[in-house]
Amino acid sequence: MAGAEGDDSLYPIAVLIDELRNEDVQLRLNSIKKLSTIALALGVERTRTELLPFLTDTIYDEDEVLLALAEQLGSFTVLVGGPEFVHCLLPPLESLATVEETVVRDKAVESLRKISQEHSPVDLEVHFVPLVKRLASGDWFTSRTSACGLFSVCYPRVSSTVKAEIRQHFRTLCSDDTPMVRRAAASKLGEFAKVLELDYVKSDIIPLFTALASDEQDSVRLLAVEAGVSIATLLPQEDLEALVMPTLRQAAEDKSWRVRYMVADKFSELQKAVGPEITQNDLVPAFQNLLKDCEAEVRAAAANKVKVFCENLPEDSRETIIMTHILPCVKELVSDTNQHVKSALASVIMGLSTILGKDNTVEHLLPLFLAQLKDECPEVRLNIISNLDCVNEVIGIRQLSQSLLPAIVELAEDAKWRVRLAIIEYMPLLAGQLGVEFFDEKLNSLCMAWLIDHVYAIREAATCNLMKLVEKFGAEWAQNTIVPKVLGMANDSNYLHRMTTLFCINALSEACGQEITTKHMLPVVLKMSTDQVANVRFNVAKSLQKIGPVLDSSALQAEVKPVLEKLATDQDMDVKYFAQEALSGTCPLISLTFKHTFS
Image 1: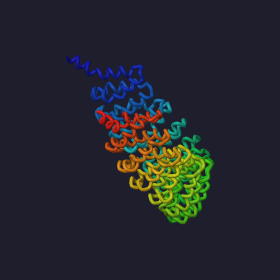
Image 2: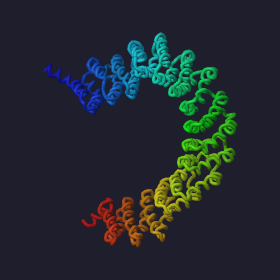
Image 3: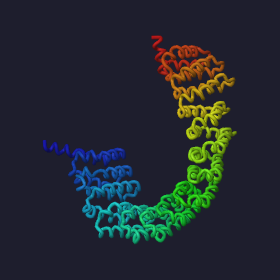
Image 4: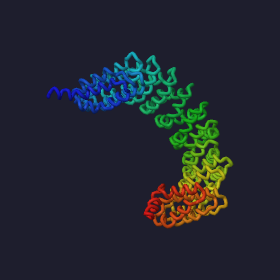
């Protein structure tokens, strides 16, 4: 019996070994994902003495299997007996941190960082730090890149002697022969600086930052820029100018556009880190140059930061700096040849109105908004319309209507149907920002005109637009403003317009509710069932099917069913088909009523 029990207890590990050696990758992957279950079945001691050594010895597999293993081991502390035995997880993770596939290494490092917090200070020095040193001095670049991500998690909790060794290892990696290692070190430089004592930041980190920022590889230099922003937040104001700014000024004028792009992308963080004086003296000219950069990607990144940069300028000189230095660059970007640059600018430019105030907005910004509102790129127009409320708060609705709305109306009546379509799609957004009264006065007639446009795509979009407007403004507004005009089109001489009435009723019935649909819309639909055009009649059948769920059973029984039965005997095959479909079960309510009547 004891022997049998022993065999049973061995079964889970036997299954694991069997599946890990299976030719089917999916089976091996499933086995790895069940590791925690198997570890529970084995118990903590056998997990430490059998399972982990087995995993360490057999790390040679497909990347997706190794990735799953690296992830699993990060939450294995409890399964090996808690923090006291957490060091047992280090051997397999160390092996995984050296593999060729980057995502596997990154996941192994992530798990190592996670379990480092569960080591006691003593265990950290005895087990974890030696692992970091082995990785840092490994023959393959893969292990050295992984080591870069582990220095910052163990440094704060070790003795001063070990700290000195860790700093030395990091210095060595920053000057490694392999660009991939220097890149990894540069990416972790800012993080490492944050856990160092201030004196060592000045004596160790600054020289490393300067060296990496002038590396021959632009992929290293751009990561050094990001580190520079982190380092700047750690230093006292008086040290910034001498220790960090020369290097960052150099990066802003780097020969590689990728480095300049990184400077532009991190500009607002840099601005907050260096303070108002350096911003005014150094960053304003640098920002101007980035806005005028020869590469579109750099201009777009800088344009994206215009609003935040202006907001964070010193309050006493903010307006002067913007008007003198920033606005001339912004005016050039409005007519930039690259649509990504214009789009980036359009997403933030409206925010300048709250900074510059009413007079400057009216005189200097409104012409720019107007130009962007007429831009050929839809995204630019959308970004302007999306942020109209910023300008509305500053200059008021009347000024806005006099300046920008004529341009919107002009676009709404543009000869190109795609331009009209774009404006329709923005209309609910615009309506929400301008309010119901202003919308009724200035834009309602436009929305109704689109319903009789000669292009079907416009009529279809206009119908969806009405539904969104009703959802925004409510059923009462619809009853008083929209529904009478829509129903009036039922008597139009053009059958396409009569069909649009039905499409609108389909879209509006749910938003308007049962009372308005039954009282106002249903009689019109029923009346149109005798239309001379077959296309209108079969759309009546489809509409009755669509609005059926909104109606009550008495209306379905007394009014809808007789009309559908009549249409079901129509001479036109399409009318007959859609009427029968509505009666036979596509709409459950009609179907139930219909069956109940004849049961």
